[in-house]
Image 1: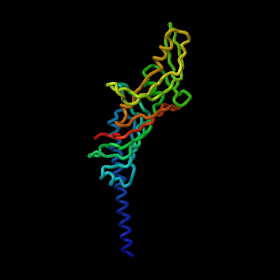
Image 2 (image 1 turned 135 degrees about the vertical axis):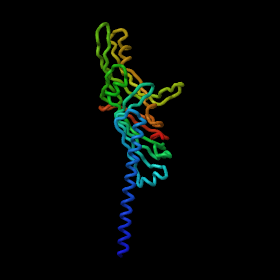
Image 3 (image 1 turned 90 degrees about the vertical axis):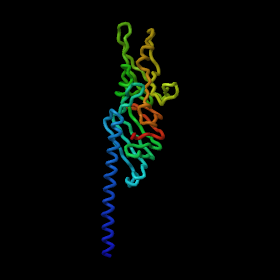
Image 4 (image 1 turned 60 degrees about the vertical axis):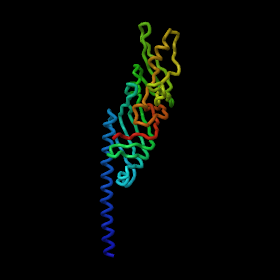
Length: 241
């Protein structure tokens, strides 16, 4: 009985040591991966990585992780030479195959969400227009000021936000583009007024090229906080080596 008690105590101690080493290892890996992703993404206010599954060490030895969650805050994506800031970018990577140096990996599939605030959407428009919630999902309110016959006219229009196929440099489809188009623009009988207003209210912005490779926009809508993005893809690069 005494021997059995000693064996049990040793097993508990060894188990606790293994668990402690395993948790230290996963925390180290999470921090290393978060720092690398932040460095590769350029301007990022914050990054957080959460590696799921226990034990971690057996997953690491096989270079296969079941699931990795990524949270980015204040990240800038660049496409077509224009920068767009995402307040939030959250993604869950499934079936991650780690690189040989454990500095990154590629996920079999991934899905997530993002948020573009109205302040950031206003900046991304580059048209001197101010954007806010349009009162219904998929709608935004666009406020512009135009100069007509020496007078400054301020107009508010409700626009629809949609997701359309973009074009690559060779004319082929190239990711997804966020499109903002005014539903109706009052011309008020003033020649050229509607065209002048639409030059400020209507714009396209591509985001797909600035997201992690393989992660694509799949849907979007709007609410009081801004534009809500849905993301998905396969063979998605979590971080390069």
